[in-house]
Length: 302
Length: 290
Image (tube, rainbow over all chains, first blue to last red; front, top):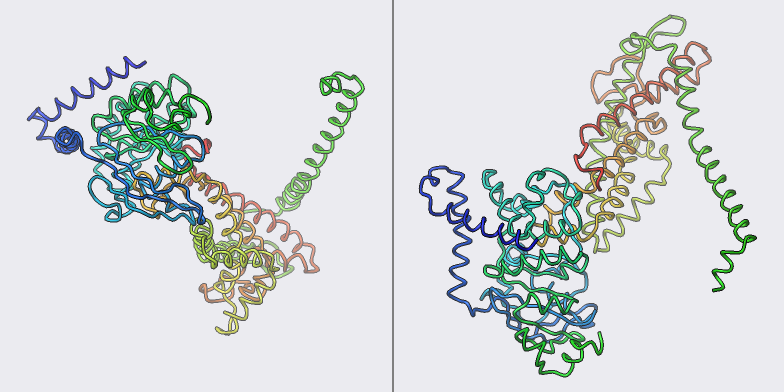
């Protein structure tokens, strides 16, 4: 399964090269657009290789309050670009609360108050409006939530269609690219027009990832993306994350410590609304600095 | 261990089986009782009405008593006109207030809207007729289809509002979050995701409101009044099926009673056809999967 997926990615890369170097194609308006689109990828990639150590998300004294009770308190964290950061901790410790603060999802919760500073991609979060920030910071949820009234195809392009109104010629390209990236293309390429609800849970979740990728965010938040899935689907999604972290920054909330160890470069441990430890994954799992972290990862509680 | 013994005890098993049979029988009987009146109405109206149906009934104006033939063409057209006016007035207001109450109801005002629509849905239709009489007929000094449509529209608002609200609340929050997280604006999320997902139920609610309005007699008695001829415009007295049926039915003539049955059959058939057409037009490819 993973091999098949990697082949997909390679095919996709070849296609990208072909598209961006073949001059003949540029006469076709559809391909000019494709090229721009692909070049955006390339630009992101290039930029990221220059600023390999740059910071994607940085917070200063970030607190979120629900009805005057703190969900998270004074979180200070710097999350590196083009890396995978896992957020672990027992239930109710503020992992999801932290994640949802990064793309204004707390707007939806009445009585939620966010204080402190958040810096996203070098700009203070207050400089973005909620639509711009969500285009830059995509999100995948715990339960797969494709739009039930739409086909697989329409689900993937929903973010573009309802936002920017791209020309139709570009859609096919984006659908294929996104589905290849999320590892679903081979399973659905012959039936893109069927209802998204006829897919299995794991396929639906990969469709949701494709839908998020289609908007071309730079940071992708994942809130326990595989907790409702079987091991094979989980492996597929982890493989996608592993391949995509070259061009995207991932922040993953997970209850599964093996998963954190498998996919992440950095791990942050939250406990009772506070950030206890944030460091390289290998360090956190082998030589944690804090006693609380050690107790959690060794299974003493949680 | 104890629970296992109770299960295995043949006396308990027998008692449970008996209760099961009794309850199942009661449920089936209740189900039958619920559908018998509907089936009876349908069959009786069809049997009594269909014999006096002919082409003239749909194309001719009513004839005076004693003259054979004649139809209720003006009442059919009038009913469609008045219900159309009512829908054009009541459905948009009901739909939008339902969206407001469900999607943006953090305010005190939304609770007031909810409470008032609940009260409004309990007001007898004749009172709404009198209200429309006071607001429109007394001001314009004549009966009109417009006044009838206004009364039916007010009658439809609470039904459409409540059903829209209920249906939108059934759409899981996760879909709204998914849409917003893609950078889709709030209003497009509401329109293209939430409303579309709930569209099946909302359309059913609208049809219910239209069907109820089409059968209302009381609010039309002193608004659109009735007319034995074609009405000149929507600003003049207009015949409608329920009022025409009512007038025929309370008359002392047997041939007019016969026409009342035929009119009743046409009214039921009309509502049925409208539902069918709307369903076919708005059928969503994936609506079964919702």
